[in-house]
Length: 302
Image (cartoon, rainbow, N blue to C red; front, top):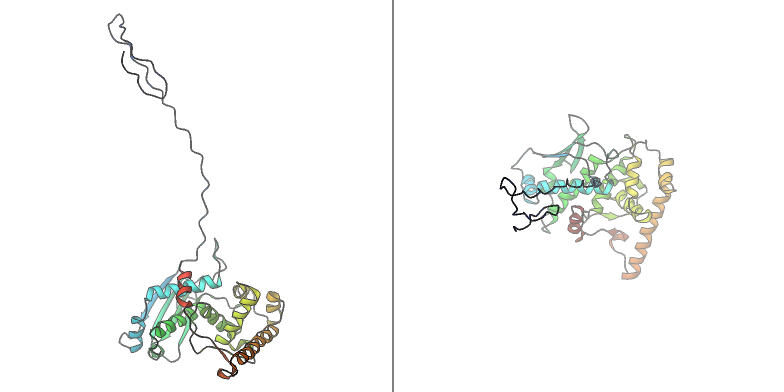
């Protein structure tokens, strides 16, 4: 008797009995069952990301001292990408459509000799393509000490200008101080504030730049994470009306918010005087550079 044939069904051993033709009786073939269908698993929705964009670079004078400093104090592609990532992650949460984010399609960084520090504008093509003009003359004057000072300052300026590429402005009606203050708020939150920035009492809340930036930072701390994001997004579809804008967001007029913020500066000044027995820097609080810059950038890029 021969061994059994393996298959999906039980088969008997091959018989040695012969028929009239003296041929052996064949064993039955195994019956193959069709595979059972695998139930379709639900496909997970992809995690929303930020809109695609392009980054470009132009340098009008490669032998300028500022150009040499710029190219030798950073990783250009990485620093530009980091600046955009900081801005988008601070001002927006991604969605499937991202219709709440300005449709900026490209940013061109133009390095050239000029007065001032930097400015941002739409390109000749259209307003969805932005240009950041950065002064080589200014870069050449950035102190070389401490060693990280130049890159820190260049990164801070890039973040500030990138905000202007991706922020809302109430169809052109928002105060300039709020627009500039929001840019410096993002720079402050990124740990890129320069050593000369100070928290100071000013007569008006919209003095702009770091003065309004510190004010917005206070709002973010008092009213919760995402408060400045709400301010920005409120400027997406509406024209700015100071009588209703701030009360709609925080239940108070901006002048009342500013007064509350200024009180904290007075309290901090008094506490500093009590602690040290003397007044420092004319009672002005000075924002110091810290180690948080590197930690923040690493967290943003995770």
